[in-house]
Amino acid sequence: MANQEFPLPDYDQIPLGSLRHRIRSLDESQLRTVVEYECAHGNRVGVLEVLRARMAELESGAQPSPGDNDVLPEVTSTPGGSPVREETAAEGGTPLRHGVPGQTPSRGRP
Image (cartoon, rainbow, N blue to C red):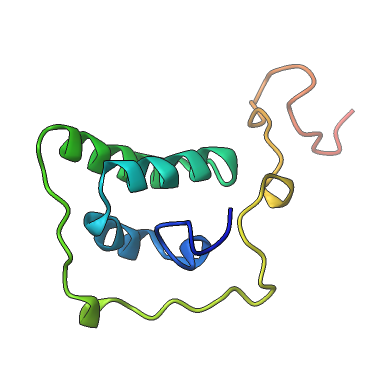
């Protein structure tokens, strides 16, 4: 997706606290685009909760609001310039469980 088409420039570098403010100006269609992008790329639980909560507000009649762009924190790129992608995400897995065969870490005891 070209950056011109995406409703939030530098989306991958926006901190969660700033994202809450930035999405307030989006309409339902634009927000849906962001949700779909997040699901396909980062799939971060906290981000999706914020996006879906705003979607529910819009579906209940809330209107987009421009906010004050002067109070937005500056978005800077990541040191590696890497956007969120599935191949850069942490590997999924079940947390280790104490006392479960095959998952209990060895402590050097026989």
